[in-house]
Image 1 (cartoon, rainbow, N blue to C red):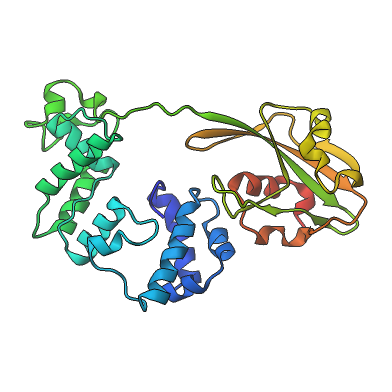
Image 2: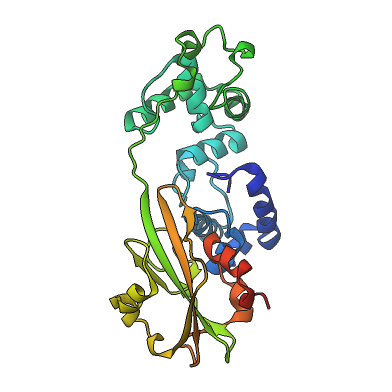
Amino acid sequence: MLQQTRVAQGLPYYLKFIKAFPTVFDLANATEEQVLKLWQGLGYYSRARNLHTTAKEIALKRDGKFPDTYKELLKLKGVGDYTASAIASICFNEATAVVDGNVYRVLARVFGIDTAINSSKGVKEFKLMAQELIDSDRPGTYNQAIMEFGARYCVPHNPNCGECIFANQCEALRQNKVNKLPVKIRNQKIKERHFNYLVMISEEEQATLLRQRKDKGIWQSLYEFPLIETTSEVSWNEINDSEAFKNFSEVNKIEEVILYNEKPVVHKLSHQHLYTKFWVIKSNAQLEKSIPISEIRKYPVPVLIENFISEFSPFQN
């Protein structure tokens, strides 16, 4: 949960999780929807799916026995070098060095390393150095100490170098490069996507439509309203004339269309920005595969959808 999540944000989710799933067997026996619903709001939902898969692996194939070595931990779904190193060293006293953002920063500055930390060369170089430095007698304590030092003292911006215990040997300080290290390649362009959600409302049935995202990519296995994605911001007439809308089974059952938000909601993900409009469509006919409005909060949905559901008055009852 703490991968790409702050402790303060992750702790309430952790407490809810262990209450719902007190053992690995409880988690293994849960449905994916139950897991995703409890994860809702943390983002990076592949982590939840990997966690669920790993719970099944441990409960059903390993008789509930958790791997206790770095190499065996790496075989678990969603467990990479960082997680395996942390668990192996802290829980099982194996001398495997942790390299996270904090460790990269400390090592790059103290030793003056300008190899990009997100390059294949950098990953190998920093891992090798961290492994050479680790205290083999107390690897867990060492790993936690260097991570904590980076998080509290050798912070990304404007660290208090004058009071740093490594001030006399820090190459970045000596070369006046503290704010330039570590180096990271930034070459990924932010992709813009335009989402048009069709919020179907059958007032007679008090029902709406949700669909599960099956494709791999963002929000896999989460639910959302029927979606028409366009290359730019569009009007209702453009949606109405589109092939995607003509293939929409409820196209002939529309009574009224209301644009909920004139200005698109901008939802920023790591490598893409979603510009979203919600089109509220009232229908006088029975909707196919509808769900009762009263049950809409039972489904795991992205935060973008959850925020709309929380604001949209017909969904408040």
